[in-house]
Picture (cartoon, helix red, strand yellow):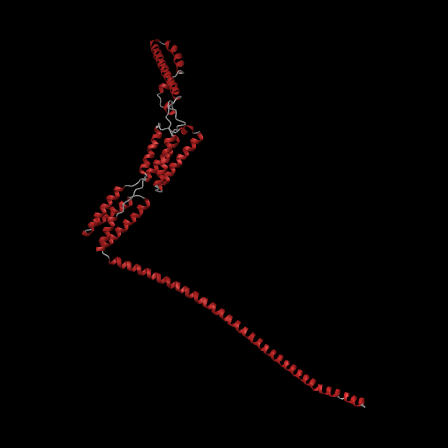
Length: 388
């Protein structure tokens, strides 16, 4: 009894429980279907929006390209316009400068026309004096300034203006001061240096002095013909002609006596010439010369050649320095040349003494001359021009 009652009660709850679970499954399915539909609708909507955005982006890109092209076109036009404007500005500036120059020239012309005759004369004189000052500074000669002052004084002298007398007196004073300053004759000094350069090869050195007792070919050629004719070689000819002359009467005897006398005289003169040459040779073997610099006697022949060439270069450098008006450099080169002459050359030779005197003269005249400025004349001209 107990088992029958308990078994139906145990079987009934199973179907009730399954029937209660089905609504939840359906509800869940419906919910999932709704969610899927919503997702599909949202995906479709998103896709449509993306398409719209893509279309908008393409349209905007096309608009941007068109605007960029338009901007490039406008930029080119602006560059062309700026170039045209710059060219026009340059042209305008050139015309403005030309107008300013013309205005300045016109003002100068009006000012020159408004001046008086005396003022124009003073302006011309002042300009001439300043140009002469520049030429004097360039050339180092006072001649341009002297000529300018002299011509200006003559021009002012032809004017009957009392107020120009002060200017004339100042010009005369400046002219005297400029003439008293003197000038360096560079051309003459250069010629003297050229002569000294040509004499260097003939100057005797202490190490190789010239032979004083020898008879030079030129001196031998200058000897009288009787000395050359009265040699021992002429004696046999005179002796041979004497017997032939003896065969002819008293005239022949007289001629023979004359021939014998001439032969004797020729023999004596020839013997005197030979003995003189021998004595000169003997005297030239020994020579006493005071030497202050012992190294001057030890110069070899090749060193003597280079010594002469170095002396020539010194003199040529001094010449170039004189032509370029570098008097300090010229003085230094001349001092070195004189030192070389005193140390290595024979000071007892007349040619060495003459060359040294020539270089000393050039050194004494090669000096910087300060040309005085005509300040008194310029001040007088300025005073007259200011007084008007």
